[in-house]
Length: 360
Ligand code: SF4
Image 1 (spheres, protein in one colour):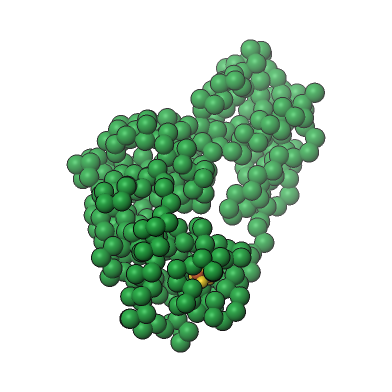
Image 2 (image 1 turned 60 degrees about the horizontal axis):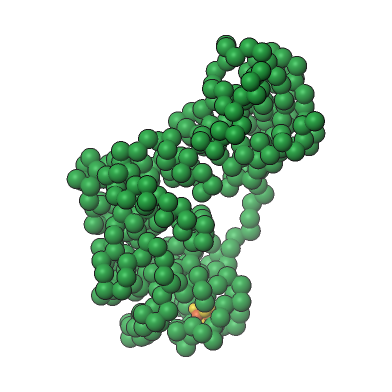
């Protein structure tokens, strides 16, 4: 920890009190939050935290409510089919989270009699639960003295303590500083309070310091422009992958879909047949030929469909073909109007739009 991030215990107490009294007056109403004075539902807390990873609160609200209507308890979710969960998850992205959501629900139902464990260590053993989620569930649902560090808390803490080390290297220092608050009697409220501060006051650009309950203790503000914090290491150039993808229609207008392997990117989701998704040049004609689902006349559509994943940009050349044969193909035939009933990830929906826009 650098000198700038040192704070006296008394000052920590004052910050904690100021944050909590601000929260009591200004807390956001969110569908997964319990009313003041009521215990939080661990299932709701866990569900919301999994959904909120890499997704905004505004987007998550509708998904959360739909999941809770469809699967009101962890036991209901544990009994669900993976396909139903993947379809309900469509649009939230990062589908490994949906698969782990189901695995975790089944573990809680089978191994923990339907009750989420109440310690960070035990929560960490659940599928898809990392240090942040374990800490969030332990603090919010069980009032365990821990501070989960998400992007909002990372920003508030790095400004409050004026942490100048670039991310991601600053993470241990931020975690150490955040942990100074963890012995509060209200760790769940404290965590949610700082999340709310980060979402509404200590926003990435132009933080509203004049409205901030801890402005007098904020070292980042005292040092000048806190909006430069947290410092981020320069972004790496995102690599590109390319593939040829095949939209094959039969005489009934149904289109061939196949299921991706269970593990790995978009595992278990549906897709159109394609060559390997790989870096480097476009697949050559030999590669395309060996990936075609059937030998027919393929028409290459103009332009490319493009989708940006976290770790790479994906460029797709789309080929359209027709066949009278419906046998000797791996996959299933689906009418385009029935696509919403299948777990098609966003990248495949872009391919659908590309075909609709570009075919004659
Ligand atoms: Fe963030 Fe400003 Fe509050 Fe500091 S004073 S925590 S920079 S909003």
